[in-house]
Image 1 (cartoon, rainbow, N blue to C red):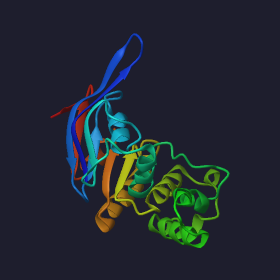
Image 2: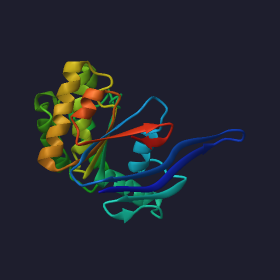
Image 3: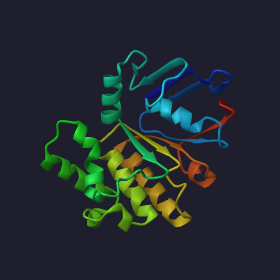
Length: 221
């Protein structure tokens, strides 16, 4: 489902060159739940952004679903992100002026989906994360765990093949964190969704199929 071959990422300014990722070789199978760990600044989020087609590697190749993406246009990359990849972030990124249902519908606005179908899919996604009774609420009326469940519903409403989660339990207490992790594990098992999760929590990482560790931009262990 995901293949990275000799991927490097270098950030350059006029005076400084920083090697963020160094010779990353990674294959993630369909339906696998992979966690990525490492100290702050080691390249975890950079790696996730490259997998999610939000950033380009300086060298090396990236394939999603067996298709090389190096020569894709910006429009093609945007369509692939919208249709095949869901994103869950540590800080939720919900829009406070929109209801829960409207927040979940947002990714579908970029597709040719009727308003009625958007609402049906949003209801289905919210039900899958146990929040069907909160559709008309606003993010400011929700707990942190509920906000993250809304963010997961938004990420899966378009039924992506891949779900990328950047510290999805980082802002939650242990009880809420485990609830969110249970939802991700269920999605992985029941929908065969491929999940790549960045985490600082060793206990969460141990619940996934495989763990990759980064240190100073390189794979270790």
